[in-house]
Length: 355
Image (cartoon, rainbow, N blue to C red):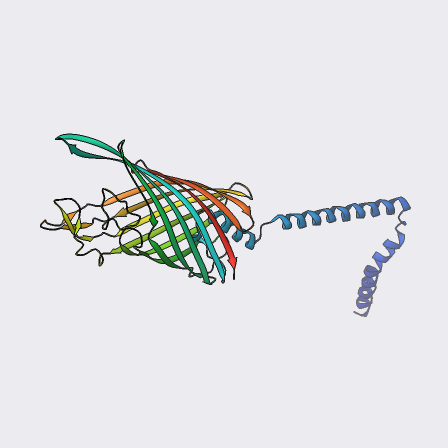
């Protein structure tokens, strides 16, 4: 047994000492081989440095979250303010100039002969819209329109009128703070006041109205989502009109009919569109709008109530936004009615002031 233990110890010592002997027997590297190895190391270091620089360049070109949010806001700013709220303490002032054309035809009797009269309605509206951000996700708004209307009836008769339109106020809230690429939405509550010339208080033969003559409240929601390379946006709306100022009117419609009361129907609406940034200064948007109005009830003196029937309207619009400076995007849009022959052209210039 003693000899076996001794032999095992000697064998282990030989095994551990063998690599040292082998290395000691290897010939030394030649100077040329050392230089070749150094050249390879230098080439590898140069390649790694180039890869590191390319990685830094890619990171510098990547769009940050803040840049994505700002780009989405710029594209939607050409559509309207309702899709994105400004930071706290921001006063927004928008000036818009709109021209609308809506031709129509009416039948009438002259000397017991049925006649057709073509009517061309032209409306130019100047609107000053202001908004103030109480908080980052809460803002108020006030819209004041000035309306010019011109109607040409047939070849001889024409009417025109200039007056203030219906003033509206509203409040908008963004319930949830979102990041770039998230589904973004705001909810709004608005009110319209009949400050314009009421159609129920004018002589239709010699005057034109510049307002609806009705009080109304509206509830709406606006949403948007960035889906590269476009931004999708849309609206849902509901409007309820009150008739407490439309009772006991004694409005003389004609020599035979006197309108006593109007009970307007509610209105539902929605719109859907896409916006696309053509460049850093230019964007384009397209949208479809639809509204459905419930029947109104008209009560005449000495007559049974008359229902007008439900009504619908739809339009298709296209717009372009031009970024004239880092804070101002001028937009031009045209909308064509799909349910009649009219169209409208609107130019809008927004300004923001930090108070």
